[in-house]
Length: 396
Ligand SMILES: *Cc1c(COP(=O)(O)O)cnc(C)c1O
Image (cartoon, rainbow, N blue to C red):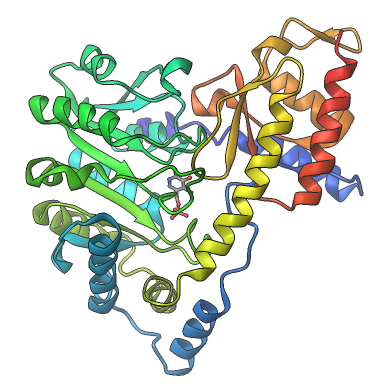
């Protein structure tokens, strides 16, 4: 018999729609995909060159399991410059992507039955990772009038004697929500009172728009810093998803356990990729600004246009590169005589009849929504939105 924990894990809900989109594409159909969970840019040249140099210089052996000292130093410097946070290198663990960092965090914190609070909408992997490490995900719904962000009283209501941690993802995927300083302080107060760990996924830190400001909850004082584990990485900021470098900053004891787990599971993250990440963090940052500007233009364009469409409703996202669109009002409508009913069906109809690929919201805990990624060209966005408009016009 297989592992009970492993059998509890659901396959990624985005996979079946992606498979269908790929199949249609291979049949020569002109699919416009808004499913991407990664930047469409190439990794900036100076970062690629650092990797080539590392390779040519023979930087091809094992490094310390939790990352090279120089990369940890660069990460400490990043936390100081960007977040006003002082960490020592022994508080940093470099991993094979932020997803791996999250896995290390749960492996370190959770005992069988420990509850982890996850605000809705959430990134698809959180509940599955929590379950894999013996935890129990506890979901909290959020409200439109709160910008789909978790508030202190709702957090308090969800607590039990088994609550171990809260996952906080700001800027958020899929919602694009960015927590304000006040909102974070309210949550930090509850976390301190109840001794909760805060797992702060800040992977979209640099992708924020329209004057929004990113705050790291760990920067509000020593106490909350000690209970926070920050997860970040280079994938989204530097268009480096394939390189697989993520990192955590935490209490030294937690870092030591994570590092020991990593030493027995994956050993060090790829040595060349660590050199590339070093170049990303210490090199010129204008590439980040350029990519951010380009995302922002697409965001403005897509947001304005989607908000004018009938039946759709979207709160302005201030971070990441997604629009999370409420599509519930289409459910009672009919397309070619068939009642739409749910977001999976909506997405399937859009794909089959208008060759547009979106991601249904169910995998993010929000079945009344779809996720639209604007990490694709302006031209794709324009024609994809046109197709969506035609589809909506056809609804009865
Ligand atoms: C992409 C993503 C990650 C994982 O990033 P990797 O470093 O590529 O593993 C983590 N959290 C969120 C919210 C993401 O969207």
